[in-house]
Image 1 (tube, rainbow, N blue to C red):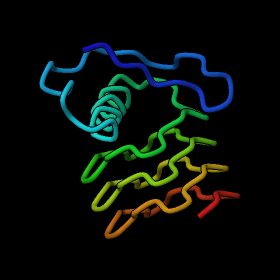
Image 2: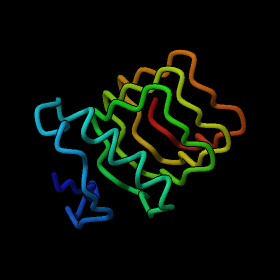
Image 3: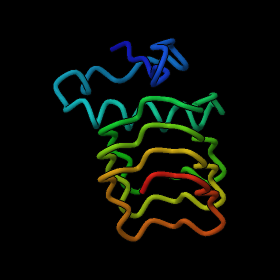
Length: 111
């Protein structure tokens, strides 16, 4: 299945990928989470990406540049966000239980 991650303000596609067909019947948050993991692995540019509702439980997002990203209601328990750049990110209602935020830049982030 084809999936796209878009810029939160312009709607421009920032990353596209093919997800396993099994994701077609899964919730949008799981699809988005899988796409984000692939994007991070590919070192895609996700600054200001719309990642609202992403299920990123246990994801390794260390060193990721997610500046200005919309992570509203994102599910991030046990995620590794060490040294991630989250300046100006919007994290309202995000679940960060047991997430590793060591060295993460949260300047002006909305928590």
